[in-house]
Image (cartoon, rainbow, N blue to C red):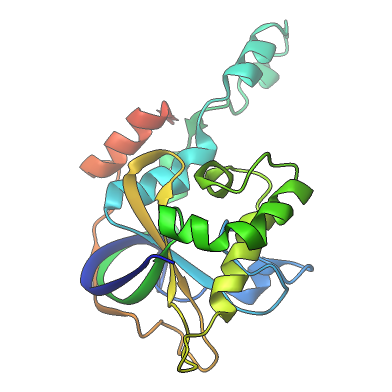
Length: 235
């Protein structure tokens, strides 16, 4: 298992006002009691995770990726002849109302400390292989490898891995790690972390310190770079 001890690693987060560093509210887990993130708990109500990145650009690419234009959908829409003026004025795939999107959100930076499992490192995959190779097969994946841990769906495998690491202990009985280090599906140059919530944790994880709010508006260079990279048109 590849574990990395971090001491004051600068991280970034794009979250919701008034406190972007708060754990996600359980009400957003819905009736299932489960969050849908790649490294969230498999079992309902067990723990929450906080997703952060090594740069503001990395965070923005992650949260804006769902707004990318879908070439297949755009092609199908182009083939539809619709003379209804009101329909033609409707929302288009790949077009984002940026002001509305920005209104409830806030960017912030902080320092991260703790021990994190580099989940796609060769040592980690080798350590987990015998346990999760059969599990990968049940989810329709051909192998348990870095590709399986990066795939968008199904997320049940990565959530199962996350919960296993959350429960894992050292020989002395302490928690094996404080979360997961991983690479973005949108580019290996973006490093991300999922920080685990532990029983008794305060509203803001003790693994982040020196929190500082950062301006985020349509003139922010990283925001312009993210929307350009993803091909998003701003409304």
